[in-house]
Image (cartoon, rainbow, N blue to C red; front, top):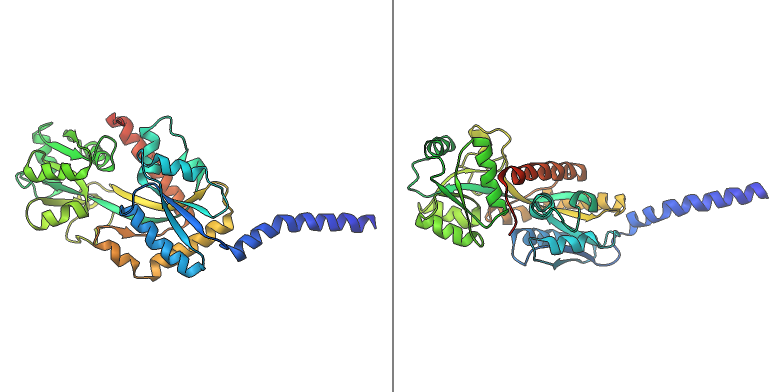
Length: 325
């Protein structure tokens, strides 16, 4: 009798450990799931989140609802997501800014991107294009570098502000190419592009929607793209990586995350769905016109990418002395 009782207690303990995972795997999700986005509606990360959320809703039979929590360089939304319950019903569409750049720009950040989140999958990459004013006598990366080296500090580059992704993209290029150019920060990219069109600044890194139409019209000259592969939005443009700087990559990106401690079977299920959505549906085509690419990965691949991006941009921030305003 005593042995039977011990066996029953042991079996109950074993089942107690197994059942939650089994139930999570078979029943998840059984109520609506919230995805926090740290940007306002319409921004690229938001658009990717909404497109994927709709497909997840269709495939899994529960609503995946996007909640926009913008502000403070995406810190507000990221902090809210990091402090959410780790039950699989609270997710975060993190970005290169909130995950890889903010730790270097804000030493007292209220969340730790690598500790407080578990990666699910990459979802989006938005390449930065190197564009110059037509008066700059250069048609390719090699000629740009030669001109900048012959005229150190004389060419200004614009950005959306100190620590913005396009500011750090230019700082990365300065470092690897060994050139000297002068930073002119703006309050957002549109006024910087306006001054680039007017010739007040000579070059900048910017996403496709703001510059490619100007380049096609001859008002700007697109030199190269910062992604590792050529962009579907402008396949004729070479990459900086293939122009003599192997491994050079400067892209904005987004990826689906969950609060640390979220059950692994839920993470695996969501990863499998995101991969299926992005590889087997036509939603990718919508983003090509925006100069973006929907992309998926394994959870481990995304985690490794987060770590490498954090290290890369942390070094750029430290070496350039970039400071948040």
